[in-house]
Structure formats: structure tokens, C-alpha cells
Length: 276
Image (tube, rainbow, N blue to C red; front, side, top):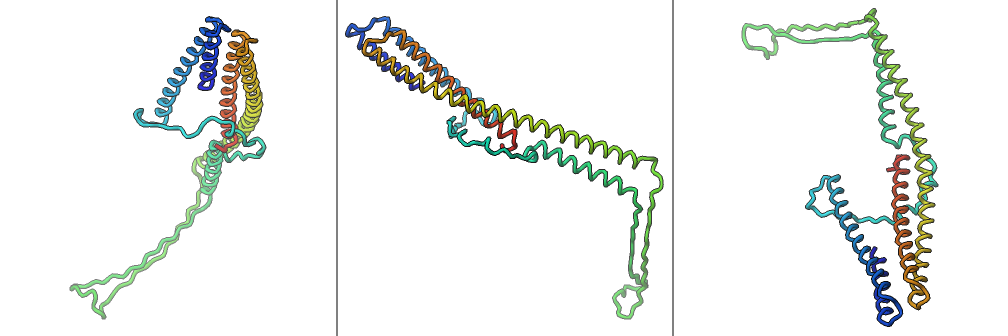
């Protein structure tokens, strides 16, 4: 917008000079002034939108509105120059939701083992050893005093016989849970494959769109400069230069939209492959 405002300011000045020297009409100068006023108005709206955007970002970050927030990065083509599509390999384990399901699968497997082990007999052992002294007087630490020793060792063998089929039901339920988790993992793999392919196609398309819109913007700028030169030497009309200015602004907006779309598509691709 600043660059376009500078162009229109120069055009307005040139048109005024042409008008003062009788080579242009007052209508031509007024048309350029209207365009300049409209563009300045759009700039004010854009600045207000940026300020509102900062307030919204502060809200998302949990920052007080009175605090200062400064963004250090800008939207540039350099952010998408790296050919991330060349890296065709990715791992499902990079996705957090896949990690959660794998953990659930391990827990289900442990559950099955836990219930299956409950069928086994259990053997336990306990032992005790102690000494007692029986006295009429408090001479427990007399060297020649009598002490009475008691000790025992015990074993307990528990053999499960019948538990009302509760153990069978627990094992069967755990196996069903494991199969469900395996099905969820398979569905998630298919979903991730689909997301990656879609994100790859969208990013590739966004890159091509960005290249086309950049060339179109450069061409529109050349057309505008040539039209302005024709107008300055009196071989072009105000209608032509107004149309060229409109085409240039449209091409610039399309380029910025394509740039933003390409960066968003890049982020979507990184998210789909678990790299973000």
C-alpha cells in the first residue's frame, strides 16, 4: 500500500503539472486524487485490522491487552523456499495421536497378560525369628542370663480352581479391547496417509500459484510503468493509467493471498507428517 500510495502521489503531482501546462484536464487530476484518497483509506483500515489482530493474538496467548507484543517474523517467500516435499519419508509415530494409541495397545497387552497370569498357582513364604527373656528383675543384659529362641518358616500354596468364569470374561474383554485398538491404529494410519497426500498436493499447488501470481504482479507493475510513461509524454489517457493502477493493486493482492496460502499449506503439510 505504501508503494502504491507513493506511485499515486507522483502521478498526482505529474498530472497537476500537466494540467497547469494545459496538457491534461482537471478531471484527470481529480480522478487520481480520488484513487489516492481511497488508497489512504484502505491503509487506515489495514492498520486498524492489524491492531485488532494483535489484540486477538494477545487474548489467545493469555496476555493482558495493555502489554506490548511485537512479532519478529514476516511473511516472505524464504519461508517456503526449502523443498520439504523432497523428504518423502515420515513415521506414523511422529504424530501424537498415534503415540497415544500405541501406548493404549501396550496397556491392553499388559492387561491380557495380567489376567492370564491369574490362572497360575501362587506360592508364598513367610518366616520369623525372635528371642525372649523372662525375668523377675530388669537384668535383660546380664551376660549369663537365659534367652529363649523361637522361629518358624511357613509356605502357602494357592491353586485357583473356579472363580465363576470372571477371569475368562476379563481375558476375553481385554482381547476385544486390544482388537479395537489395533483397528483404531489401522484407521489412523489410513487417515494420516490421506492427510499427508492431500497436504502434499495442496502445498505443491500453492507453490505453483505463488510463482504464477508473482510473475503476474511483476508484469502488472511493468504495464503500469509503461502506461505512466505514455501518459507523461501525452500519448496515453487517464483511463489507461487508472486501469493499469487497478490491475496492479489486484495483482499485488492476489500475490499476497497466494503467499499466505502457500505458508499455510506448508504448515499443514508439516503438521500432517508430525514435524510440527
